[in-house]
Image (tube, rainbow, N blue to C red; front, top):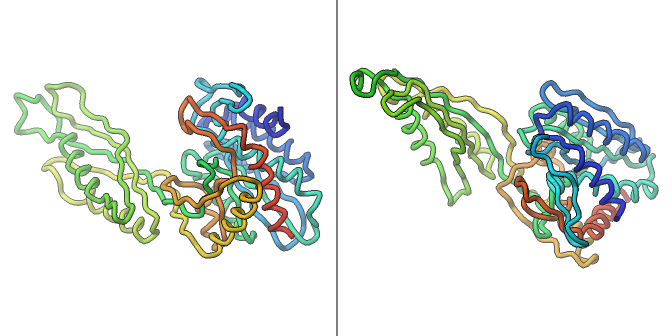
Length: 366
């Protein structure tokens, strides 16, 4: 087995669901050991709810390159699946490409590149967080602070059919809590005020905010309320999200959500809005496009076919982009079934993806 796959196997076999803090801390210690073995100084920044943010630094030069990844997965320990080779072309395991494969690529690219870089002229910082899948609330400050000291940021999220990304939608998650006047659905029908009816009215207005011409999406993913057919519901609940590529549109959407919930609805009922996890949009820039072209040239020389993808999926690269530096995402391993129990890795491309990352780091650092 390739050394990079052996490293990946060790990471996949250590469950690290976002909310499994104790399990995540074990993997953080493994990452600390692995990156220290490269000569990097590693600091674990403790989280309150989640495992620590791992920050690894090397070199004293003024020109610093930032590498990014997350080691949490959407899968809690009780449904984790270990690394398994299906055949010489495919492996499976939960988190194998999203994104423990990316961290393995990062580690082995640095192992190959660091001996060829002058630490007096250049520096590298790696930021590995444990809460990306739930909005990076505890780690976003570490990401932005290190990005401000860097000239560019590379993210090792999984590759999608060879695509590299410099533009991602922003996303804001929210929840709605509707209250009404409960009672008997027959005897008290005229006295009641259904929280479900109140909630549905608000949701209908929110869905109207969708605008395909502007790539604005609205989704309600969870809804609940009431207790029985013959009971007027006094409580109802929903969770959803909005997404856009445009920061100004995101601000407009936030205000529109506030206005919808604050406006009078069903008499005797009301709705409370709570904003949760969010990622800002990552806008395409000329500098990021130039970074893509540099990676594309390397990939093409290796027999890969890199192409540019703008995606609705959010990523921590957006926090780095707020430092006004060029960013590039998608340098991890390729596969499929992400966020499902059928997640898999395409082994046939791993060596070339590792070489792409190594050469890109070397070119960027002279």
